[in-house]
Length: 483
Image (cartoon, rainbow, N blue to C red; front, side):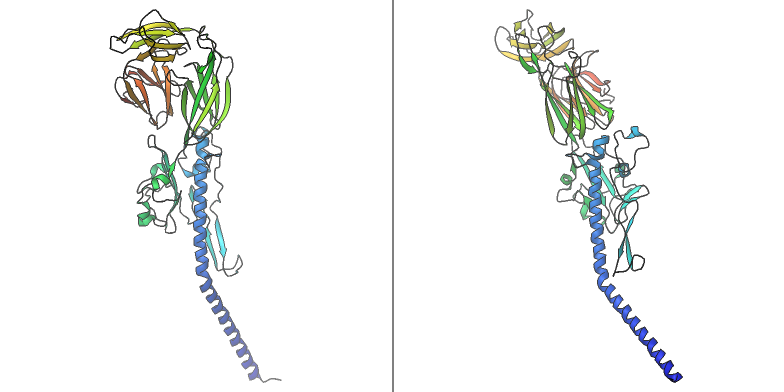
């Protein structure tokens, strides 16, 4: 039997050996961590950056879509979201965001990702827990745990919009000042469109989508509106015509309805102009339906679905009703002859027939003319045609000014009016010939004749400017006190 002292010595040696082994294991573990941890932290940093970049791109896509087949929140609602949370939460009142068909983002709700180091189990440290980005409370956060910043500038008249999503990066700093970074109206400080933005130390590690380059303004430019051009023709059986001709002015109404917004976004345009066969209409990107009507047709002439893509023109060739301008209703045509030379009296021909009355210079002469009939103004007792047009349908009297100088009429449509229409030479009952429309926050310049009377109405048909006689270049702001 071993002596008691031998047993004690053996236990001590065994315990010491265990301590040595434990210290060795700890040293090895520490050494492994020292080698592995920097690489793992670098992986975490890379993953955070990639996750945030994907998130910024996803939010951008949610706002405007790919702009070819999808059009995002803007395509559905017709405006940008005021707050990024509008992409994921339905409006309290559907009337505040008609057409909302979200959520437009599918993000984790305040989740985290756990990174396991050195083969440890999920329940055994050491582990690293990093935010994955998502939604926390009332803000969308990035993988760094910071709220994503939302930059938008859509208030530059006739210029494309500017849109960017910004992460404050690892250091969490930015030149964005307010406490509500996800409401675009509150942006202050250096803006991403400024080429000096990355040079500020607070923005040095920020992530921006679209990624910034040498020309930030160009990189962040975003087109979200396109144009429909309707070219309508109708066959005129009048023996003096007997051909397919450009649409009779004011004979057709084109109703354009947003598919997602329905009756809450409907545009009604009088198409076919005296001076131009094509009627351009500016619209937000997305899905629309077109309906063409005429008082001479019992039902819709055309019903068609269209897709408006940004910064592009969709040309529509539409066939109207057949007419006979030798038997249409008659209306009053006033020819105002502003020519001054003694040789500038005018003969008026309607459907090829010379009218008895001469349109003398410096005078207005009235005629009774059938709607949609072709009209020619010739220098008296010659075959020289100084002007020609088609008599509009339903505008009486319709005044045509010739021999006057052309002047520019610019419409500056402020945010009060979603859309306005511009008419000339109408009366108290009919605003006149529609020469175009101007969308919200847009500028458009029209060429008119000195002496034309211009009227502007809103989308509901209410007069918001005029009628005003234009004799010099003029800028109209619909709804302003000058109206």
